[in-house]
Image 1 (cartoon, helix red, strand yellow):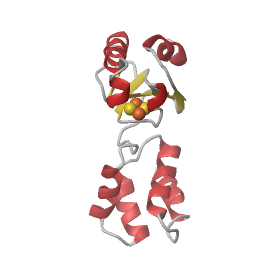
Image 2 (tube, helix red, strand yellow):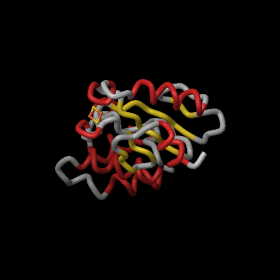
Image 3 (cartoon, protein in one colour):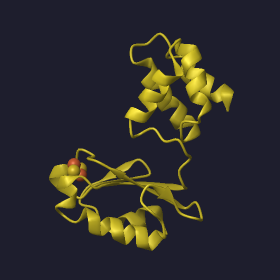
Image 4 (tube, helix red, strand yellow):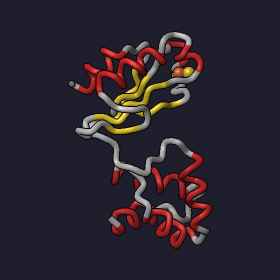
Length: 147
Ligand code: FES
C-alpha cells in the first residue's frame, strides 16, 4: 500500500495544488485515502501532518474507508430536498438496510449525503458509481446498482 501511495503522490510534489491532485490519485487507486497517506504526504511535500489532515478533512470527497461495491451519493441540499430527496433517502436506507454515511453489512452499497452536485435545476440528483443522475428516484438508483 505504501508503494501505491508514494507513486500516486510523488509526481505532484512540485505542482501548484499538487497535494490535492496527489490525494485524488491515492483515492482513485485505493478507493479511499488510507491513514498512512498523511505521514507519507507530509514527508514528500515537506509539510506537517496537520496540514495534510486539514486538506483531507476539508474536502468531503476524500474518504477514509473503502466504500462498498456500489457507491451512492445522494444530494440532500435544499433544492433536492424541496423535490423529495429526503423521501428518496428514507426509501434507499430501508431498501439497503443501511444508515446514511455507512456501508451495508454485505458490503454491497455505501450511501453518503452530498450537499449539491450542481444539478439543482433538475433535482433531485444523485451520483451512482461516479455517474451523475438528474431527476432521480429511489428505483432508478436501485436499478443502477443492479440489486
Ligand atoms: S441541491 Fe441537489 S444538486 Fe444542487
